[in-house]
Length: 125
Image (cartoon, rainbow, N blue to C red; front, top):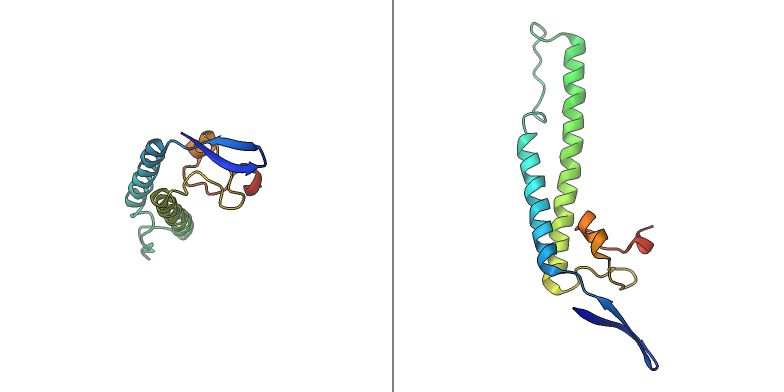
């Protein structure tokens, strides 16, 4: 669907609107992926037990490092879930696919790579 972006005198600038059905599908897929990964890594984020008999000092340090990395990945997933929710809100109010800074359309190729993008490449750079 085409939409008038701006009008200057006799000239009108048209741009293509994003495919909203595909956007909903991509956002749903991304949300499901993030939630599934969160469930899968729940055990890796659990506290490391202090059992000097079965786990040596270096092994325990390695387990603690892996736990911290899993926790950092979970924080990143939670940030992405918030971005998905924000994109769903923009979709509901008709602002999805339009740059939050300049108002230009965000290309479908960019939205296919990052369905949560809220800025065009130029403004995001």
